[in-house]
Length: 351
Image 1: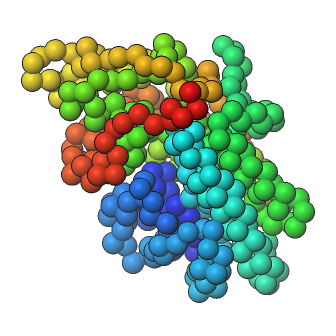
Image 2: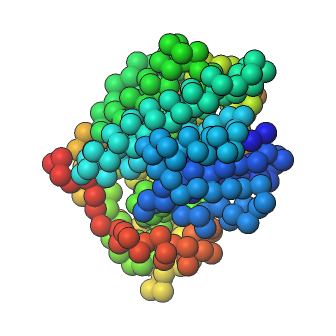
């Protein structure tokens, strides 16, 4: 099988390519703009595979994207390219509208044109897999879970842009017949995540001796999904997911933000004790909350478990130890990642 992966130098996209190279004989063409968060080193050994091709390309570039489709002749597309950080979307929503909505529209049009020229067998086997987020559903109360039928209520520019892209993908299926599948995931964590996100940021700040800033009271709840579990679910959805269907993917690991940070501190105390012998938890501080901060996300994974047979392998406790060890063992990758970002707070312009 020949797969186009957009955003394959990003956090989740690179995990998908690593999984493809390790577990299949598929051929991959990675399309990535290589923004601040894109890093080909995140592909690991897969970067040198003869089955992985790369084009530095903006998905808004229709001509360039058409060329890749024409030359590579894919059997499927896994669309992960996106601006993804909520705080950055508060400061500069235009970039999110451009990449996440206009870029998805452009990719859909290129895929639709390509699909329309395939023979009957090619049309039947082709699939456009759109990877999205649980943030499109908005905020939950203390009870309940997001299901595939939950109404969309995005509250940040990022979430709104991803909701818009989801709707476009669904519309291209209903209007034009383009074979699609959509997946919505919970918060990912694991190796190679850009250190603007909570878990890698807190690891870097802790070992640097900096304050660990927690938004508000730290009681916002997220469902945490280990990125390699997510990659496995995505490949299942691509291969076995029913055309036109949506599948929610979560880690069954609800934690408040302060629980996450305190867990990180406790594990770091064991794996890399501070020079002064003081617990890293002493570095925790509380800062003004993010504007429009959703209170709780939680995903019901019943559908993908029952229909496709997927369950996460990692608990939060096992996944977080693997994650911390990876960051401690890969200081050079972290240093390179922090060249364009020094850990400063983002997303304050909405305050």
